[in-house]
Image 1 (cartoon, helix red, strand yellow):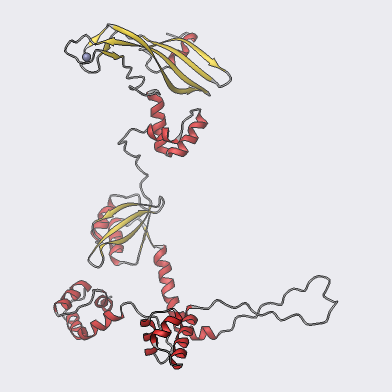
Image 2 (spheres, rainbow, N blue to C red; image 1 turned 45 degrees about the vertical axis):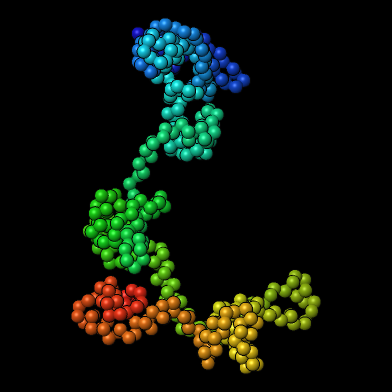
Length: 399
Ligand SMILES: [Zn+2]
């Protein structure tokens, strides 16, 4: 059966079996269509006791926003009914008829408009979703877009990761470590593994066969895990460790040669260009240009401080006077006065720990010869022998 052309607007309505189109008005100034609809339901069900009834109590009007038609905004003006509940045992006496295919109680928009706003909100978020809605003909703010998302809606599944980075993290430093896996394309952590073992990483990688590139540090454990779990993927060193590997030897080279570097003269600056028109007017030589003063390096600062401390000491100042005059701690003054010559060697933070380890070097060698090559068992054995320090210094000879 071919529909009549006059029935066309009715075909665009939601809940066609429960509503009848009475009339429509069009406002050309705002491209706004208002549809006047009446409910065709003769029987309604009480929302409390589910008892059907046909006793009409009264009528009321309700306004809903609906999806746009072409570029026109649509408003539904509904003429609905209130019914009596005829069940004497029910505490609800009067209720409004429900139109579950059209909307939910108290809502101010149709179900299909709410669904579309929810999908836009899930895909774009509030602000970007509201901007798209304005382009599509809805006048909604970002909060409306977000509120349209039903609570506890599961987020859409992200695409399978292609490029991931793997590194360890400490649950408790020096004692227990886990593994963090980051989706590098999305800049998001996607998994935390309970330990840093190769098998655990391999098991996770086997569940993600789409991975093409793996970034890692130089750990053999992770290399083994990746070889087992994702042999198809390319393994690359991550940016942090590449830069660290570059920076460490450079720092060592510059520190070892700092005296020679300080003696190097800066290159002569090029002659300034002569101002136009004055090239032949004067034979006087140009004013010498002094090179810009380079910023004092930290080595220079430390050397100047060392010399100043000794200068004040030779003048007869006490340690307290030197400290107050230079704005440094008495401990620092005392340390500098213990040195006869300036030394640019930076203090190692674990120097004290290494000093504590020295009396145990013999036992450490015996344990090593006995076949104990792992840092943690070595540390435990030394602890039993009375070693008071942390795990780091015993780990260094082992590493
Ligand atoms: Zn009832």
